[in-house]
Length: 33
Image: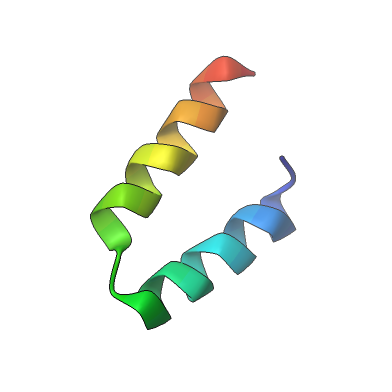
């Protein structure tokens, strides 16, 4: 997952007000690297 993809996900998540799930997802994908 690239930085740009992550930023896109974050913006989408903010619009959907689903930040906590999004942060968990980003953290998970970062740890899997």
